[in-house]
Length: 371
Image (cartoon, rainbow, N blue to C red; front, side):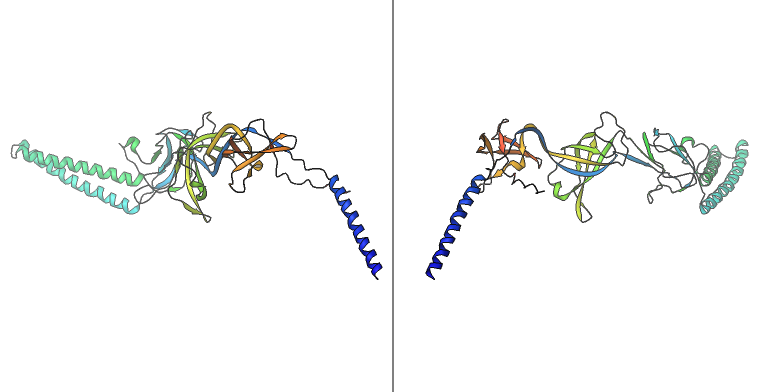
């Protein structure tokens, strides 16, 4: 019994001994870990935030009529360039029956008054010629007659305006002819011949006959999230890209940040505006979608490394890298960082352009699958 136990123990010891020898042998056969290195680069680093929006005219003027009626003719179309005073459309007035009746009654009333004053004037003139009445009495009769003539003419003009929208003697002031008030390009003509239009007054905006704008003065109008609005300020430079115009960026400056945000789809959005610099006069259509890259910080042609190469001290949390001094020998170098774009970071001090940096987080190489 004792002899069997002794043999078992000896076998176990032998197995452990040869197992240890095999482990040490296999360990010595493993290839040592070889760390790759990366280089310091010279780059321009831009820290920015993105806002989406549209390109719109700086000033868009809506041409509205000052009289209600029906469009009789349209003389322009979208895309045309026009000048202030150019004819846009003509309106045919549809008379209001009540106003027309009142005006007609006014004409008849003033005609009766005129006929009466004419008779009085003729009687007074006869008496004045005979020397029966004084010059003052005759002058009063003459004045009353002239006022009656003027009232009659005025009522006739009022009747014509109610009936047709214009009258003789108004010339260019006739409000049935709609003219442009500014120079620019016609962006839209939302009415057609036969459409009814409403006059613009204190109680009604009126019907838009045409919208005109100077397309040489375009601006970017966009929205930025509340999480980003605290990072921006007026006068920051902006690069604007327009989806419909490829391979081109427009420089701009942030001019306006809304003091109050609006809730859109559950998030608070703030409106921003920036004028567009179009030095080569590229034709930009109003309403095109665009993205604005607001430049928060910029470092031109500085030493930079990938952020993935950085390590951080466990106690101080200060950044450092390990640089190669000899083959697979590295030393630690503490760094002072600058601007970061999330991929590259500026190195203010701690590295030279010739340094090779240890890729510490390269990981283990995956074994190739067996065939």
